[in-house]
Amino acid sequence: MSALLSVSNLSKSFGAVTVADDTSFAVEAGSAVGILGPNGAGKTSLFNLITGALAPDAGHITFAGRDITRLSAAQRCTLGIARSFQVPQPFGGMSVFENALVGATQGARLRGQRANAVALEALESTGLMSVANQRAGSLTLLSRKRLEMARALAAQPKLLLLDEIAGGLTDAECGALIDTITRVNQQGTTIIWIEHVVHALLAVVEKLIVIDFGRKIAEGEPRTVLDSHDVKTVYLGVDPNA
Image 1 (cartoon, rainbow, N blue to C red):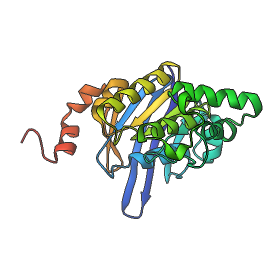
Image 2: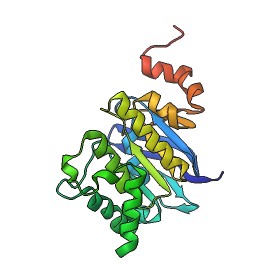
Image 3: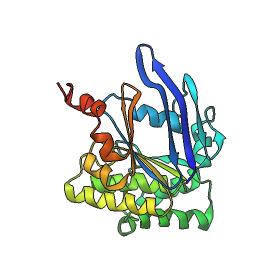
Image 4: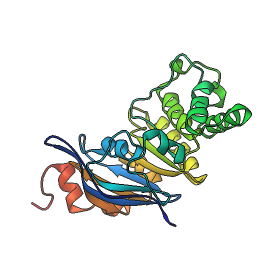
């Protein structure tokens, strides 16, 4: 596999607060990568840098062989980068289908029957066809999180960024969400998933990146990373060997 996304020496600070500290990593096309870190580690800020919501102070981002560091968020979306948000943000007064249609028309720039077909495909992929005509504001938390994914998928991304999409779900709901994310990945969409629900990440991802205070402290096979000294220190707050 080849790298779809490359992040090179990325840095970003807000005064004394550093959210990205010379961060570098690559994500292979078709892979699923997890990002783990304590609250305030800079995980969502990293997504904001990748999607163009934030501009870096230094470093470069390459996507599909193109330097996108200075491109706008809209341009990056058109190239094939889409995301969900930690707190679902549906257009509550619109139907589930209409929400997905926004992704197809505004993200993928599709029109007419093609836009309708892509929106319906996204709802099918995320298990939302049965509520396609329901008002989005009336959905359960699980369905709202699935709708976040569906709207992003309707933009026809090569790369899908998921931000803590399993938070607040029951075990059964989390299992259903894992099945959906696995299916989307198996259909060819590259996934980067920020999550605190570690067992959910381990069920999907093949590589894990751990960051703390904007600095990458570990990267590699998930269980090996979780067993590393630096990661244990960050999560336990003490030296595990002391």
